[in-house]
Amino acid sequence: MTARPETPSAHSTDALRPDTVVVAGGRPAPEHDAPVGPAIVLTSTYRGSGGLDAADRAYGRYSNPTWEDMEGVLARLEGAGRPGLLYASGLAAIASVLSLVPAGGCLVMPRHSYQGSLALAKDLEARGLLTIVTVDVADTEEVLAALGAADLLWLESPTNPMLEVADLPALLAAARERGVLTCVDNTFATPLVQRPLEHGADVVVHSVTKYLAGHSDVVLGAAVTSDAGLWDRLKAHRSLHGAIPGPFEAWLALRGMRTLALRIERSAATAGELARRLQEHPAVLEVRYPGLPGDPGHERAAAQMDGFGAIVAIVPAGDVEAVEAAVERLRVWTPATSLGGVESLIERRRRHHEEPRSVPETLLRLSVGIENVEDLWEDLDRALSAIDR
Image (cartoon, rainbow, N blue to C red; front, top):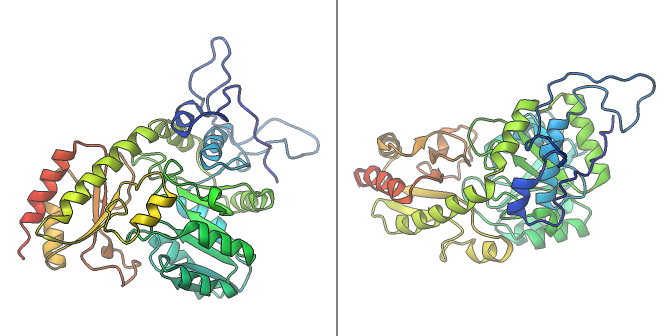
């Protein structure tokens, strides 16, 4: 069943800037005594009889007004011509997009990608549903060379966890010329920093769990596209596979997104300062952050992004045991997976078995939150300085 079309809100956000859209979007019509915030609609079904058409909600697996509040805001932020599509998790959104690859088709994706994306793609390949070609996404010529047999080009930029930056305009234009479908995982950047649809992407996906919801208390995903045909296929996949979000989770995510602009501004500023200091730390061998002038992706990121994000990767001196001991000494930073919350998280990524072997064993991914920069630095400096070099 095709979902009902988006109903324009009396609170039109079409002409507003993104940092206002996150606050004003998805609110009820401004009528007398109307609530300021949207309601949570908890229902499994809807009243109705007779034939069904695209405007009918019919059943809770197809539609929910609380989803649509969030989906409308996402569409405006990404510049999409269709409402976004919320999913039960980021991986559910990824699975929906990967379902667009025809049986036996070819998927081109970065060798360094979100490990869930890599694991899912490998599972599909093991079952004979597709073949994978992995590329160094920062090497434009290598990616272009892989497009010959591709059915879907999957991109991350910056990549997780190596923070490589792809030439999105060049790669997306080349894929379109060759009839290759494209999807960009925009979780790290968020639509406040990067809007891949503007560069020609067919689909954008998000782990809403991360920056969009922003408080480490929701698991959700999203896909966004302007293509009506792709939207219908993704929507049908979500409904058929039951990969739908809960209304309460959707409401929490929209509430969290109200502060997205402020959180990104604070976190990115702190990340840049920490990255600069970490470059000079005697216990740190390498720092990856696109905002650093010497970073391999700096010029490309500066040209195509509105900022550099709030993820930093470092390779400390010492072996795995020493690095893990340093992480355990931290008191302000929280050792945990995930990212994009108000709290600063740190993780040795190779503790995940699915992480590519090309990721250094001791690489730490830092998701910088909104705490005081000096408290974050003092905690890091103390823990890293104790590493026996």
